[in-house]
Amino acid sequence: MAAFSEEELNIAKSVDLVDLASAMHIPLKRKGRYFQVEGMDSLMIFNRSSWYRYSQSVGGSTIDFLMYFNNLTFKESVSWLLDFAGYIRMDISKQEASDSRKVKETVHKRVPEGKVPFVLPEKSKNCRGLYAYLVKRRKLSKEVIRYWLEKGLMYESLPYHNIVFLGKDADGNVKFASQRGIRDAYGKPFKGDVPGNDKQYGVNLVYPDCQEVNVYEAAIDSMSDMDFRRDFKTNILVLGMVSDGPLQKFLKEQPHIKKIAFCLDNDLPGRISAKKLAEKYVLAGYEVTVRLPPFGKDYNAFLQYERENRALWNQLNRSKRIQCVNVRETEEISEKAENRRCNRKNMRQRSAMAR
Image (cartoon, rainbow, N blue to C red; front, side, top):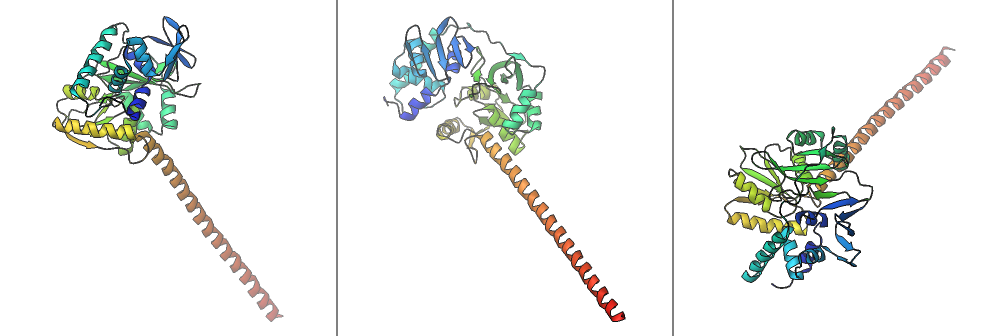
């Protein structure tokens, strides 16, 4: 399986360049709508998917970025990016698997360990921006938002007012953090992991008495599913992408888990990953189900559709009730008018007979 499919190349190119730079411990700073590599002011990242170094007239995609900074071949770069994105290639040869392991070791050797400390963004004194975004834009209930805040799974940061989602280990120590922008003057919201975090962990919620875990790609999707199903008793794990590294770590730290439900996105990459992960964990001895959103790309899209249509349905029902009331009122008014007309006619007839 030497050649890559078009789908695999697209997945490799779709890896977020900011996340990739963070994983490679390359420090970035934001400059307007772009990102700039610290110490390389001429290197700019555009749209989180392409880059250009003006001083050397070189740039390109995420594949080119990995080839440039780690001196890898095209094949090695694509393999590394697919692994980084959590894409599981089937039917690869033993030689390719061995080569892939060597590439990982090479990249990790070239990445200086401990260069970027894991420092959480400053916390805002209130969560007004967080509430406004999640309620108005994402259609989540205040109850679920408040629940996640009380569990310490997220907060609103300063100075940019991003939502920071937190992943903790079994002892409650924060090991992972990702940010989701709620305000962006340039159209595309900011998304990215906090530099220096441990990608073996994901946002998670543990109930010791529950033996099942629902696995999602994104934190807002897990909140949406919890909101829709009113489920406050099932364990939750957010992968961040479709890599199962956080799931392996979670299962190791939570040995009471016996059942896994993969609640990934209902798109082609999500369906493929759900199938492959299900097969993998069935062989590992777990009871596995795949539960994709019944409508829309992900669980938040489904929740928004359900909430918007429910609001429309309620509005239509109110209109029908108002219309029915108006019809009844009109009928009553007409009946009273007819009675008055008949009474006046009878009075005129009696008056004429009296004369």
